[in-house]
Length: 145
Image 1 (cartoon, rainbow, N blue to C red):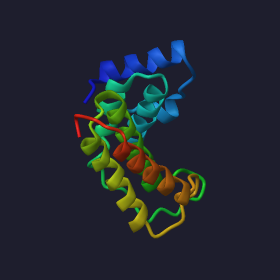
Image 2 (image 1 turned 180 degrees about the vertical axis):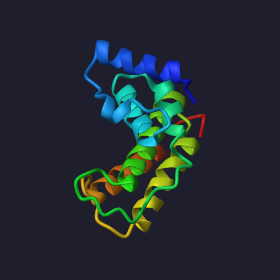
Image 3 (image 1 turned 45 degrees about the vertical axis):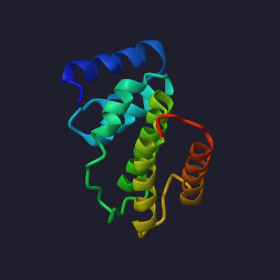
Image 4 (image 1 turned 90 degrees about the vertical axis):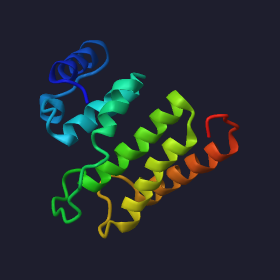
């Protein structure tokens, strides 16, 4: 996991060179949802290694599946998004399908077991994107399988 100093340096780097990141969504390294937001920002700018580190810090988080707030991204949606993007980052950097697939399958399990509708993501679209990834990576020849 990144240190507090490294975390803050990445926030500053993104803000100064790419786009605004408001403190309310990234400031607190101890908040897994803040780490997920910074990880997604880093992925968007091609900084895969710190993004992977932050995404991996979210993998073992137990999410609240009983959320009632209809105005924010649910914890399940957030974690599904993180797992999907972690898999993509890993695939892009290592080409190892088996490692990436583990996280895509975990995302599919979360989707399948979540009793409520997603609020901000289209559940069927995410499912389809994951299935496309699985299919695409199965067709690509890789010696790192």
